[in-house]
Image (cartoon, rainbow, N blue to C red; front, side):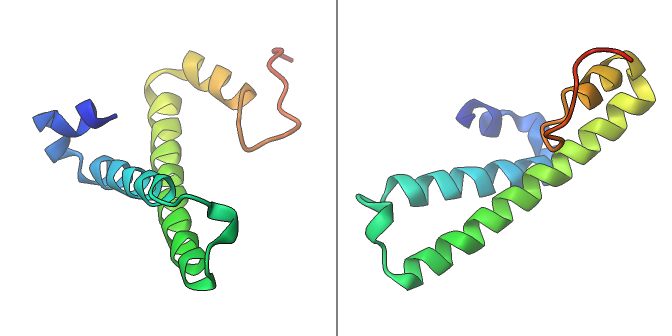
Length: 95
């Protein structure tokens, strides 16, 4: 993922770059802690904000990607909808 941030083309895709930074920051915060189960409430609150930021950024990118697939690659969109990670009842089989 760090290689993605080194790509100068990503400077043109600020929202994607922001998503990467949010995910990297969350990962760094979690990895820096020795025991995430015994954290003080202040740390838990801080991580909750970081988690929300990362999830929102990932969701924005996912929706944008799905819109792109729907308009430009309907066959890939069809598969992506059938594999929808947000639908626990998703069925891969074409009906």
